[in-house]
Amino acid sequence: MDARFVGIPELVEVPDVAVVVDVMRAFTVAPWAFAQGAEKIVLAGSLDEARELKARHPGWLALKDGPPAPGFDAVNSPGMLRTVDLGGRTVVQKTTAGTVGALAVKEASLVLCAGFVVAEATAQLLRSRGCDRVTFVVTGEGGKADEDLACAQYIARRAAGTETDATGFLRRAGVSRAAAELTEGVRQGVHPDDVALCLELDRFPFAVVAAVEEGLLVLRPRAVPLSIDGSSTDLR
Image 1 (cartoon, helix red, strand yellow):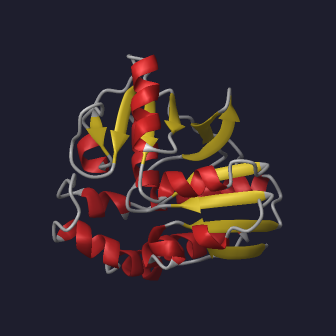
Image 2 (image 1 turned 135 degrees about the vertical axis):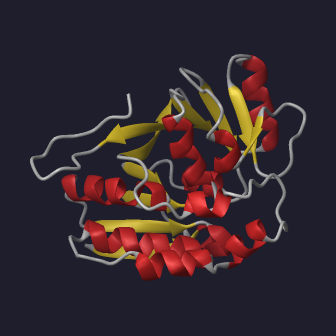
């Protein structure tokens, strides 16, 4: 598999297949939302758009980076979200990097959003689709975030069918700038367990697929075969 690793500013053309990686924390939060029962996640391009979507759909739940704010129900923290019952709900998500990266490639034929928690499912979906050229969008720090690059590189190797020990990739993420900022309280809206939750390898047996629906970029979980007999596991 031919894998490219680019930051959001380097996206000069729409790739055919894109994997958008945000380990800390957008695309760790999204799988957690599905695990907590969310039906779908709508990615907003701005805070104002997120508020407007929630205003038009009072039953939707909106979340963002940083501290709590008027018009938002939750913050972009897996540690906080894991106790919220989202059964059947639609979540509106707006973050600093992850949602921006996904929206930048929304016209691709296949868009996956990933972190370590869905790494193997993401890799298996790429393999099952026979994707021979994949662009990995490293969203954090303009493409320099080592936690996102490490995760992207790990998924790329697994998608190519290479037996790969995840230990070194997880270690890089654990000592990244983002991990330090979350641990040291530089960022707001943080739960003490956030970093550990972001480093849980293959916590969920589904990939997160993004597609345009009625003009909005929507995330949904996609179960993939996870066993040697080809059976699949769904969270519902």
